[in-house]
Image (tube, rainbow, N blue to C red; front, side):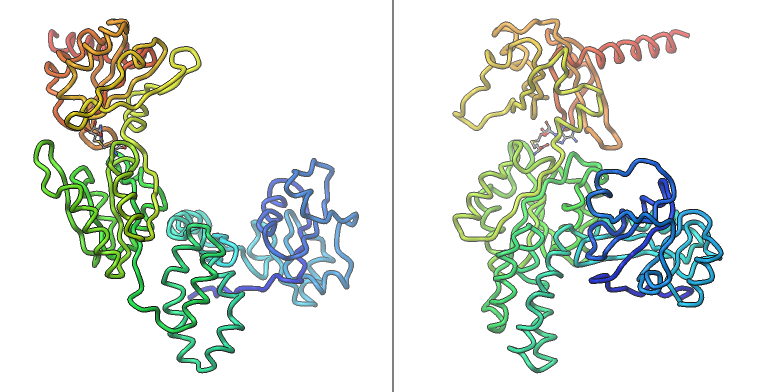
Length: 464
Ligand code: SAH
């Protein structure tokens, strides 16, 4: 360990920044959410950003007086410090950071992750600040936003806990239960009152068979980089992951190693695990006290039957949360460069399933046939002819551009394009067979032009 990361209490302390410009402002911003008094010895006459003006005292002196300097918790200098500052800082052991000059500094600023009550920091002792910043993003993704709230609440109840549980070991056991149990879930969900209640009720001793929790999590279209930070954190935290067929291995790799995985994957026509049985599994696992992630392709509430699962969980009195994911239509639109809405070409967008439950209502083709309207069809590969017929019979222009994106965001992603009158032939000709989104609308015009150009180029290449 070349450097030691200490934490300095900021309550009732003063932080000073001497200097001007971007670096001075960056240091000031570090402390905006802290309880410290922040004083800026502004050395130039540049403008003051609104967030800084609202929180920082701007001194009319270019440098603090001696007494003020001695009472300063941290002093930052953006630029070259004066001889006086150097001398006084040394004499009074002031914590001094000269931006970009480790030699003149008594401390360096680590890369910080600020979650209020929880602060994490990465330091390389000034050797490679960029490396520290990259690592910060890694830590950033693992530290949920609400974790600071949990720490703040723990601080609030600390005295109560001490008086109720005078023995150190009892307190240790209490914190181990309290900070990992329901209070954590509530805090991370932003429910302050619920988290506080959970912390306090844990004081009555271990709750009988603590109930688990189910998160219905959207895994996105397949590219692990399109997981949300929250999804990733929940995967790392889960005891049990119940997942669909569409969730690829690259995403399941992110699941905590010793978590149990239950594959309830469906294939069209054959339902290995019926929907009711899936809900039963979720309920049973949660009742057994597990942290359950129900991982679904795309977004749980877009043709994912997440709504039905949530209803069953709620009816069974299970604590359940929904974490949105990037839905296939969005990922495929992005891949094909088809804006779902566009000021000129698409004033509305609709997500439609081409497959409806037996006896269910057919899509309302008339409503979808209006011009300047992007229609994103899920599960449409096998039903492309009926999509074409439905839309054109209802009056949609048969020349409307279409783009079909197969395996969107995955390594074998493929984009083909054509016109509505040719949709089912296009799919058959190109042999589209994987999960695909059909994007229909004027906004697909550019994707069609690009596809035709590429086709032309490859035709010329094969001739040559
Ligand atoms: N809840 C999911 C949709 C599930 S329905 C979501 O929000 O994306 C399954 C259908 O989604 C597939 O038939 C296909 O139409 C579409 N789909 C899912 N993943 C896809 C992908 N990577 N590329 C293209 N389409 C996809």
